[in-house]
Amino acid sequence: MSPENLVIIEAALNGGRERREHPHIPMTPDEIAAEARRCADEGASLFHVHARGPDGEWSADPTLYATTITALRRAVPGALVSITSIRPSHVAVDRIVELLTTLSAEPETAPDLISVNLGHIVRWEPSPDGPFPRRTIHFPNAYEEIVPLLTTCATYGITPELGLMDLGFVSNAVTLHADGLLPAHPWFLLELDSPRFGSGDQVAPATVTNYEALAAPLVEHFPNARWAAHGQGLAGYAVIHHALTKGAHVRVGYEDSVHLPNGDLADSNAGLVAWAVAEARTVGRTPATPDETRQIIGLAD
Image 1 (cartoon, rainbow, N blue to C red):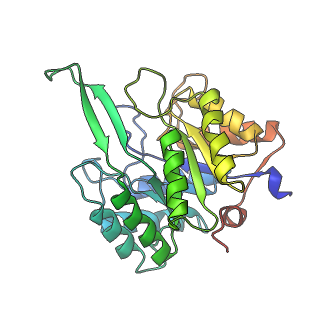
Image 2 (cartoon, rainbow, N blue to C red):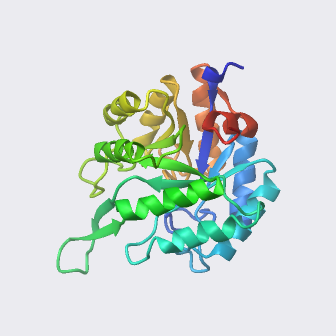
């Protein structure tokens, strides 16, 4: 198979979703592992997971992440595992550095990749009980926080998935490259992580126009750039289809949408992967195996 025809299908299994949004959001290590197995059977080769505490909330507990990664790899031998560096504003980046350091002490628990968003993420979310109709939620990514993450990745051989959510994030990527902080062959996530204009999410909404607005300067400054694209909500499916036609790789999963393109709730992440594989085949592309995924991303370098 020609490398140009291969497509990495990344499955983002749970993200920040809650069970009230879908009763089958995988939370426990065993649930995440079983969901990864179903997605692998449909053609996914890379799995992005957020370990969740007993209450379903955000966690950076190394033991919980180690258990989750180990269970996933037992369920899907050879799978590539990506975790997240996103954290609430009250949590110092040192917690994520500690997480990576602890996980990397054992080959069985070391992640292959970690998403590192290259800018602050701000959301104005509804606040019906507050003094204003909305409140501001901040997920921090200051320069002095991103640098330790990238340095730790380099130390332990973890590939950062460099998240680009708006034009300023692309500019930040150029700055980090000029400062010598990016890998020689960076791997990006082109993330249209707002479902629509007016949603309160202060990043680029999921439209094909916005995809092109981010992809053009990315290629200008990184001519050999490789990336996976995704979008938030139902609007993201047009972005994914467009990315497939342009030769990019793609991400699907409950983190991005709990619905199928027709608006029905997906029974599992596997249904979203199956849709992406079918779309890929309509434009002459074939899902990459885990080994082929390693080659494309550069993990085999």
